[in-house]
Length: 395
Image 1 (cartoon, one colour):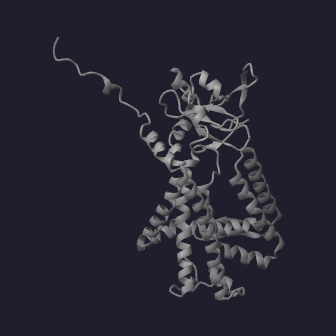
Image 2 (tube, rainbow, N blue to C red):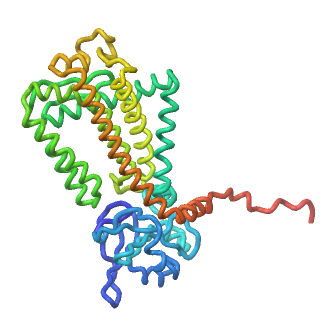
Image 3 (cartoon, rainbow, N blue to C red):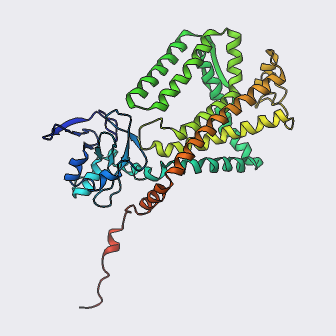
């Protein structure tokens, strides 16, 4: 079994009379034991078994039964609460929590202390209703930036342009062509190479294996999603690969933007810091996907011209993405329909996930107020000198 805190292998420390193992992590010194053992040791409250089925799941259970660990009440207020599994009825107690409950003077390891500080906020930030509210706020912020000419210019230059070039490079790599994304163009290293095919295949294989080992279904689904793209690149000819690489510059803005937003709804990493990183994925994803969808809807309606040319050389550059696709035989109508359809498909995937999370969050809305109260009641650092009485003026 792997430790829920640091993913290191757990080692059995002792067994009780019923044969249940008491496990200890040698890296972060976290404890994995039965809930009865935790109650007897004063690590969780006596009413903890009644709260196992409530709350929000934070991370997968080490037992591999598909359940997620839920926060449990401790006998006294602590910065990081123990986590329990509703199926196997085991409890994970971090070293810092155990030290705080038992009054131990030895602090947790430095790396473990950093993880505990991150754990202190996931109860609130991991709530599905918070996720449902964050999505329209991110879309509104993106539309507000687009309303300003300078804001739109810096957004396109600093966010959309790098994603555009990464879309070219990823399409090339998945098609078996070495490519390096640069700030304003993508450097293609020759033609089809089997070394690129083997490198990409090994990377996807490692992604799938690591997802299975860490029990991360979203990461496994991402690896499976990449496999048809590799087969598509291997089955085509050189002309088809070139068109595919060019098409996925703008197409990458739709696909990668949608994947960043979808990453907000799923756990792609088992570290506690993912609950903070996912909000950065949401901000970047909406800043790429929403402007791309709006722009191509305006192009389809005729209120915006087709973006021919390139960013560096202007509209007369025949080497721009749209110019190359038109020269390869694409018609204007087919090109616009392809990008509009791709954008709407990406929006549909995001909308389905948002509705799923909003429905789940509405069912669990009562626990959001409790999580907010726990967040505000979290112990804060106090100045040691603030509790000292003022010196007396006389005897």
